Structure formats: C-alpha cells, structure tokens
Amino acid sequence: MFVSLCVAFGAMSFSACKKKGEGKQEVERGRQSLEQIKAQVVQAQKATADLRTRFNALPEDLPGLETLRSKLLAVEEVMGVENGRVQWLSGELDAAAASGNQEQIQKVSTTINEVVEGSKTYGKPVLELLHELLPFERTAAQIRVLADAGLLFMRVLPTGYELKGANDGIEELLMDVVDGKRKFDKKAWLPFDRLKFSGAGAQLDQEQSGGQVENVAAILKAYPQVKLEIGGFTDNTGPAAASKKLSAERAETVKAMLVSSDIAASRLAAAGYGAAQPACAANDTEECKAKNRRIAVRVTAK
Image (cartoon, rainbow, N blue to C red; front, side):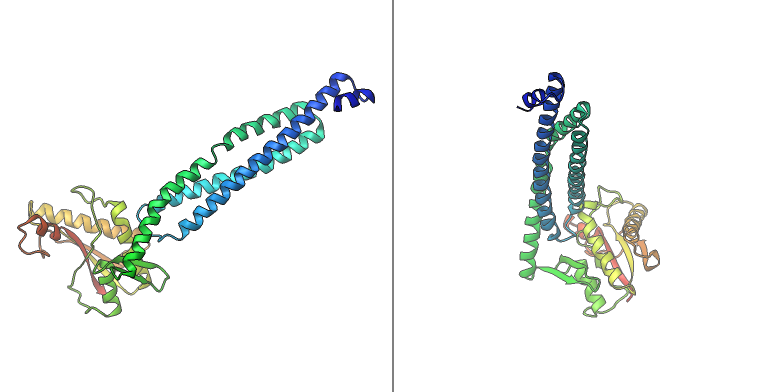
C-alpha cells in the first residue's frame, strides 16, 4: 500500500519507494523485537530480584554462600547490561528511522536480531541460581529448628553480627568467658570444634573451617579488649619435634586467618605444643587421639 501511494503521488521512483517501504517494515519489526527483548529482560530482572530477597534472608555465615553471592551479583550485572543495551538499540533504531538510511536501518536490525537470539538464554542462569539456592534454604531452615529447640548456640553481638555455633562449641565457651559466666582463667584452653585441615599439613580446609574462624574474629571485633593465644596440639604419634613443628604451623595458620579478618596481630599469640597437654590423657585409641589433635584458644586479656 505504501509503495503504491508513493508512486501514485510521484514522490519518487518505484525502486526508491520499495526500499523506503521495506525500511519502514524493518523498523517496525525492530521495534517489536525490542519490546520482546525488553519484556524478557524485565522478567529476568524480577526473577533475579526475588532470588536476591531470598538470598538476603539466609544467614551470612553458611559455608559456600560467598560463592553463590558472587554468581548472583554476576547475573544481576548481566541483566543490567542487557537492559542498557535495549535502551541504546531503541535510540539507534529511532535515529536510523529518522535518517531514512536503509544501510543504517539494516545494520541496527541485524544487531537487534543477534540480541533476540541471545535473549532466549536469559532464564538459564536464573534457574541455575535457584537450584543452587535451595540447599542453602534447607540448611537455614534446619538451623532455625535447632535454635528453637535449644540445640544451637545463638547470640547477636553488639556489632549486630549474628553468632551461631554448637552448644558448648568455641563460640559459646568464648562468650561465656567474655560475659563472665565462665571463670577468667588464662590457662584454660577453649577448643575449636569445627576446624579442619587439608591432609596432614597446616593448610586449613576453608569450606569447613572458614565460618568458625570468622565467628571468632567477629567476637574479637565486638570486644576489642579481648586478647587470645592460639595453641596447636597433636597426638603422641610421630617424632616429638615434628609434631611440635606441625602444631605451631597450624596455630600460625589460624592466627594469619584472624589477622586477614582485620584482627590486630598484637592481640594474638600462637604457639605449638605438640603432644603436650593432651585433652585425652590415655592417647591409646583413635577416638582419644582425635581429641588431642586440635586447635584451641585461651583468653589472655578481657
């Protein structure tokens, strides 16, 4: 219709009219595609925002949550970029339509088609995030059940940090000393209960140990007058000199982690005691030896 009217009124040649008509159709298709992409971006952003709300409701110290936080942030950034690209393409299309330049219209249209193809995968990373989030939500629900049943130690520190640990775990033992519920004894060792090393060396298993070290760091931040000595201990297996060296290296590893969490090194001491001061004096069974292979702290100032 547009071409017939164009020629009838003598505006231009049939060929020119045809190209202009095709250009208008191309622009209209481009606008429709942009609306389609925009709707998909909005839907993906809404789904990501819902995930963010659920994510923020989780305890911050769940092991592995930091990795998921990074993935969620990356998806949010991608969706923000895509939203910006849709707006930019809309402006480019309007400019091409106003100029009437068929080559420019075709170039923008090609870019829009490429974005349309890419937009078909917007939902995939959101779905993957949802699947990864579900186990953390189940864990958080279990924690709440344990806390409600009095089987989990929980305390909100003066800094606002929510402290969670096992009953009679290092978090509760250390807080009892700070609060005065437990006698302040510079010789009393308070053992970590969720601290593990990778293999037989001094490298901490971050996935299993990071949360408890972070909890101790949070206590030290909330009570800046508290100072600790970190002691490393082994069982009676192996040469005494090697055991003492390993226990010292492990104690230093924990100290270094606390320092990396912004705890002043001057508030921390570290020493290796090898097989001395066993928690289980018999040292004759595997269970007994396991109790002796430990890292503990004692409060030296409060």
